[in-house]
Image 1 (tube, chains in turn brown, purple):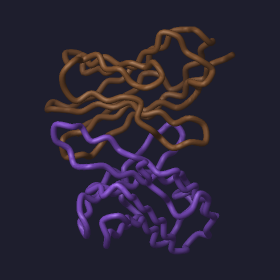
Image 2: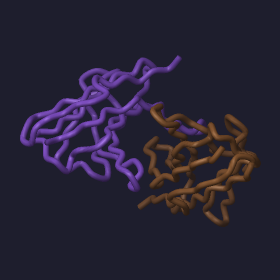
Image 3: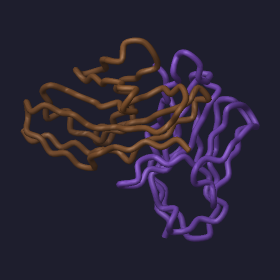
Image 4: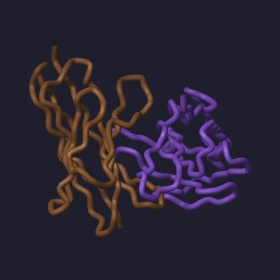
Length: 112
Length: 115
């Protein structure tokens, strides 16, 4: 069965620090990968997605993620975080059937 | 602007009650989903539907049922609510997969408390 694991449950950073959140998936076939973000009190929304082409994808608010097929990984990065990046981040993988499997989520707290 | 709406933001019910959670999307999406979100457990899929009157069980369907009579509406039913169903319930919709990669659009969630 398809599964997604996120390495960190809670990350605490100071403003301007660099961020990397790990995500690994297990699925042998074609997979589409996503990072979603949930800001406090808001809906889950798409941060970025990968389905083919350039393995380095850029999303909103300066986030990017790199798909490394050999490592089954799709890590999220941001060179300099801001207090407003405080949120919960979810990695997800889905097949072309459209059904997604989500990781457990990583809560990011950015201290001003 | 795409929109997924859920009938209630907060709901308090008693054990044994029948509970209906409604979700409506205005994007003409084929796929609709119900998840529950619990701290440390991420999003767990309860049921999904890829067409009107079609449904498939997700990872945790026990104690739940669904109904999709119209394309835009997907209902989650708790036949007899129990305290372990206290949770945040999220509805989502998407277009089918294929080359485009089907991102999901989420509603605001319903926080259900079962006493």
